[in-house]
Length: 511
Image (cartoon, helix red, strand yellow):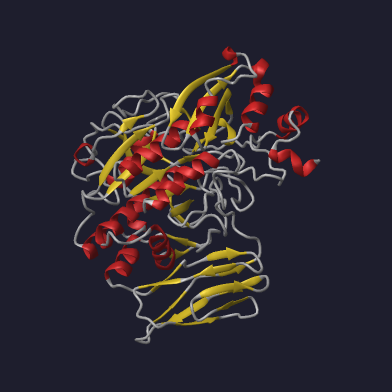
């Protein structure tokens, strides 16, 4: 399994829980089979949890029977896949207890100007779900903006953030970046102090949580009416192992919930590194790199033209900590809630905006910086709010990376049909009268649209070359039959399984 140690305040899955697997089933017969396992001793497989929203059962398999049990599971009709239950862990940056409560990031993104332009600081009707280590909902700067949440770690209604050496209060800090009230002397203010925070805890005080509970938290947020999910956590795992997480994000996408994810903190290019949920590829998702006070990329921040959408202040960020404290943390974990808060602020101005539209607005209105993302930009809250309220015309998506011969459809926000499109470099990509881009050869182009009133808008770079990591065409079946994919992320184990059950779908390509 591909693993890498992430530092700073990013939450990371360093390994799987030994013996634990998530089994995705598609029918009741397969679900019932999980309780029988006729070819394996009954005591070898223990059903630990059931998530009916995702059609997923968490099982524990004794090591001596693991290979045989996996072979039987994977060969059963109605079992879509089996993946190891990924472990996620919080690594928090040291807290600077002596720091003044100066918030350079708010000045950098022009927060005050954004609030003045909007005439508000958000709306209580807009809900941001902070899926994390929980939130100190009694904090003096947070309590007025808190609504009911849930604790998936302990399976109760108390999502309190519990601190330890591994967790200085990561979730509380993220919540404060979004919506600290700014009404407490000596406290802090969030980018959208008028919105509501739904605290969802799936990581414990030891910094550990699992993939299964992360999925439950996403589904809960969608079910309970969240407009935005802020996810400052992730794991460097194969896409096949991330399948149940991708399915949960797709369910959020289908309901119009915007998913904001941290790019990770190991200084790598996400275009060539599997990081999830950052690399999910769904239209409702915004993946965030970190920027520093001088608009440079901190060495630890991940990046990527195809998979990371934009940058946001994430270095030495002052915010709330449990028990009415405040302090600095650094990481893409801190950059992410700032974007989540701006997204919520924009939704407060226009609830009809989709994730794809807001992503395009943030990219085209952002300040240009030398940080490698799809827009090479850093968010600017004022420019984004002004774009929304002025109803400026924006092409959606505003940036992208395509493989040769791929196509990408454009839509126009705030434009009047009919539209005329033009490519700045037709030898790289052409664009049809209906706004469909066709990639021709490696290179870069930009697409300009002119609407019926004569207004124009232009995309950022449309890159033709290495294709961005995309959502799976059928996320319920990441190990597509016959393609040789190992669905459990461990090729040596799959080789053994194929010797036992050579008719398994992922074995056929090797026959």
